[in-house]
Length: 368
Image (cartoon, rainbow, N blue to C red):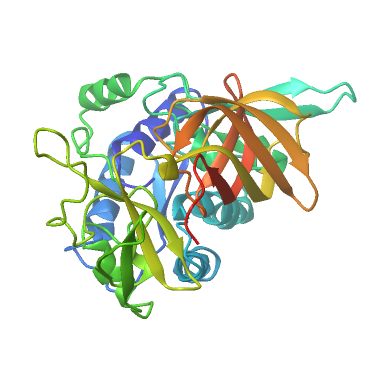
């Protein structure tokens, strides 16, 4: 129970279904944890208030050490290497469905449940054993299967997603009718350890700055960047070159600049003008560190994939390669395919798993 409306309604639904429910509040970050950026104290008060109203016991458990070792350390390594990681993916795999799951089992629990918008389906395999599938939520606008794609059979076998069949509007309605104190609480966004603070300022406390040149696709020097770690492909704001017009249209206006490439060898940040510049579009990618829900890679063939959250499924062809890697070829070019982010594979509503994007091939050659 995080103190948010989703996990609160999930706890109530489980009680209605006859489960014996114990609420667990996870504290995953301690460094400069204050009310300005991280609301864990208020979240705990909200969670405790809901637990009292719903009629469940609740306890707090601290996973800050595990989070720092398993999630945050990887977060810093990836940014240092010029990639853009998604810590929510690792947090689910390593904390919420590993450290939290293990803790729940030591307390004697049979199952864990969260307020994620996703579904689990159990099917009998030809061997007679149950095979668990991760499915998209019924509410496509809230589906979180993308962030859950690294869960395995053992984790899904012990997991319930009570909100998977509900729309967010219905969850809010239930919360209001129950009189939950957090019924109108704003959904949390982003990462708690960053909160609303400027991202570059936060990252600069952990990673050294290494300024370098910003060049256009023609090789022209446009300015200076603060360090490649502080930028991501497709980024438009915060480049510090707003006054550089570059190529202009007939009416005198100019397209915006976007980050299109990071050259670590020369410490150069390349930018291009226009949202649909060929450098920002890719028809194929390679991903590694694959994790498959079924325990093994699906057969090669036609599927759909997402290379970022809030993206429509993109038809593609999948090929498994050696060493836990795979390749995807898309029917239509994909925008700002970013190394470090997750490429997640789908067969209809079934989330098959995915991996971390290692390479992408732009539509046009990128300058050396």
